[in-house]
View 1 (spheres, rainbow, N blue to C red):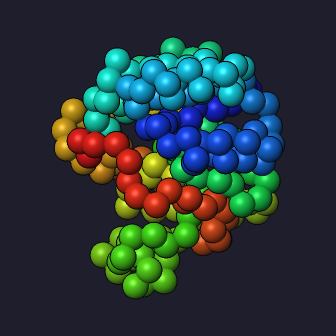
View 2 (view 1 turned 45 degrees about the horizontal axis):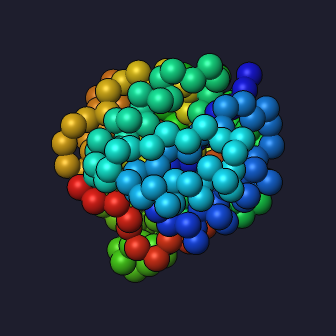
Length: 221
């Protein structure tokens, strides 16, 4: 069962030139389709992407359309991929250690209620730094997280949100429409929760990826 690697970028060359090598080095499993979705609208950047990673299919927006429309385009691309599984990452994340995709697939295959298994990043927003972690900040807002195991693997299961952190999910998740509204990522998570889905962070509250961006890029969040 192959896993498509889909990287979303918005023109941050200094980030993606670290993010893609990290993913190609650290992901362990059958990697199938390789796709870069670019929302920069910058032809110079796009030419650089093609020259740097010719093995990737490059999907370009005609201009900067904003986060919501960019994700709707990504969803349309994912829906047409031949791979059953999708590894999605934004252009400003590196992986801290090898990631066993087959292990994650084994959990998702036996837990149909899980829409996504993501990697935990370092605390970044102010409230996360204040509470000592991303999960801790979400718990302070009343969300519940629980450690779960199948006897071989551990994950932290929750119903808090869909995350843009590097993550694995079934291709069929992209058949659920991405909402056409502001803060669409949060709205998509709520939409999945209403359908009965839950989410997970891989491992036991351990940081497995690093957010290397210095600011949130793009517009129209």
